[in-house]
Image (tube, rainbow, N blue to C red; front, side, top):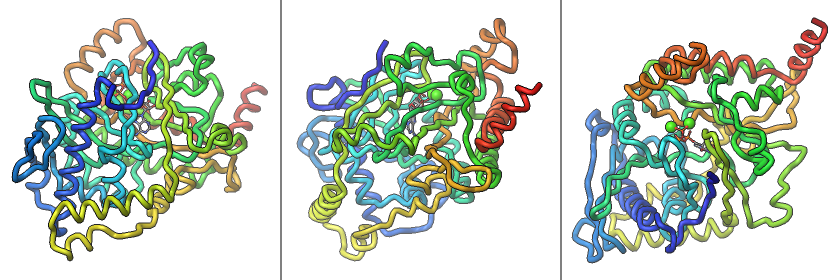
Length: 431
Ligand code: ATP
Ligand code: CA
Ligand code: CA
């Protein structure tokens, strides 16, 4: 089975779903952004709002191409989260507006999730299982508090939680989150690491077919790879990782991974030398099979600025909102303040360092992903079956406490400067 990313255009089988998702997002996000800022209340975390869209439109919703229902969850909370993550409201809307076609990383893996990338590659829409949806709603207050007290968290940044339902269709839950990988840099290698070795291997022949397929723990170890950080940056990284994992343990979450994208500065941007407007990327997957190739066009800065301006104007035209409200919520220029987030501060990532603190040859793009799986009945069943044939601590679905501990130990063990790794290697060779 080969997963190939495709542009979602009018001929795509999920075009209507994608179109409705974007139409819904655009409507609910503009709606909440237009309101005056206020303090969050406990009720905001449970809030849900339902909207009906149809081709004629009504007093509440504008006309849409198709009939569908859209549900928006905790809009005030997500508005506040987007602000904490330093997203520019106009920019967010622009990226997800229906005029810009998404790309789909199709053919779901065992989870059944679909991934859609915004055209500018900044955001990912992931369809999620009902149990993941319920979990996110339940943990939202804890997640929010964690973001507040951990501005440098490595855990996935959630920007919205929604549900779409087509006429006669089923309900589709989805989240909007950050794409960890930058639009402007080639990612030469990708790893999805859990700290387990059982079944954590991408067959090397798959890599011959696609050198950028997402690799796993065993591929990492086989290559003798390290997250090359000197002692100071290692400590910063491990301290944050420990805090993040502690939260996931407390919330009884498991099955998450550290996603690691590696940009090799020595190799630079190969594809882009050939064609600056074409971008190749492979989100790949935590799957036993193949990766994916996706072609998407990256708009230039100038083009972006123009589109943002246009969108702001359209938004102002579309909604007769009092002047002081729009003015406050639509700043013309927002500096990329993500630069202040430690792990995203070196060209959107975390640069390797040598033992002496000198910058290294790689940039890492890091984050904890797939962190909405509750340790429920499904996992317990899997635990039982896998437990029959594999050694206990190595099987992937162990309880959340141990899962987190194993995860941390693995990351601790692979994070060291190149110099330290070489000394260890030497010591091993010397016996
Ligand atoms: P499974 O449950 O089978 O592991 P899933 O459908 O829940 O799969 P994820 O594990 O969340 O999917 O992600 C699959 C792959 O998609 C990851 O290995 C990674 O390559 C890519 N991916 C997921 N989230 C992100 C992200 N935030 N940024 C960049 N790439 C991502
Ligand atoms: Ca996963
Ligand atoms: Ca999953």
